[in-house]
Length: 400
Image 1 (tube, one colour):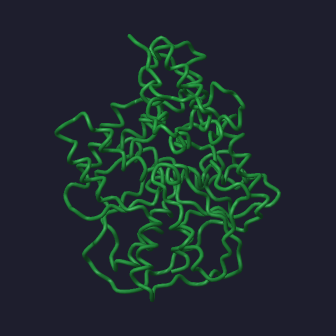
Image 2 (cartoon, rainbow, N blue to C red):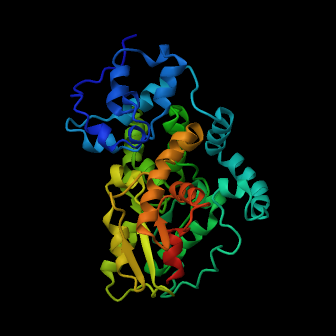
């Protein structure tokens, strides 16, 4: 079988300038240009373990696609190549396999969550497992959220896709999102019980069949209404938007996938638009003066190109001073299950971000990606100056 061709890759190197993995490793083979060169010469189905490792060492962040002058989609090609791989690469193979299996099975995931969450909450503050799952240490857990102000309505005007983290592990994110949504709409959003994982982890690993299966399940879960679908996880939002592309070869699902994607609402965009539509609405002042850095999730920055709404919101809140990183937004290195497969690389990429955060010296770091939040929180555990790390929904819910 012929090797995958890079088509019109000009080998200009623009991708190397923005690739977090290349910046951390300095290896040409780990840039988009390097991987495309390899794909042009060897079918992934015939790849060695070393070749499989090179293909696994990509975050699929989309930075290369965003700067490609010829409009190529390297991440898409790497996912297609991973589907053809017969060898497994990266660390913690068993843990990644179990994680993907759980994420693709809502019943199994709910069972694990119901058994595991009470145990996790009992862990001591310095427990490695507590840090692994990004749970707050004792003393900084989120306070109870205030009652939602404004008018009440029993008829939801939004549906809500919380994602796996907010459903099973960091439930305060889902609760906060519902409170903020209700402040603008007057009712709590509808949450279909049949929804499941967005499929990002499965597709990133090359497990396209599972990614398609959960996509179809989510489309069906929300098919009972035509409400806009709000999600407060940047990675979920990015993956849900891709359903039309993912199911493009299935005629019976193509139109349904497009209709589903057309209904999606990203959280910060929803809030910024709500504030614009209601000039009288305002969040309360921060209880103390704080410098805040907004961390741009790669899936919003490169895939959806949503960077201004979160900043617009934060600038309106009295007591918060928005600061930016010296060299602009930085990847955190989490990348779905990338941090499990490539912990050393992920750590180096995160260290670059943490160094910039130390220079900015914020009191608070906020983001709209649950995965980024956990990875940054883990990295700051032993930092000299340790800012709070909060999901934007949680921060805003506390200021209603």
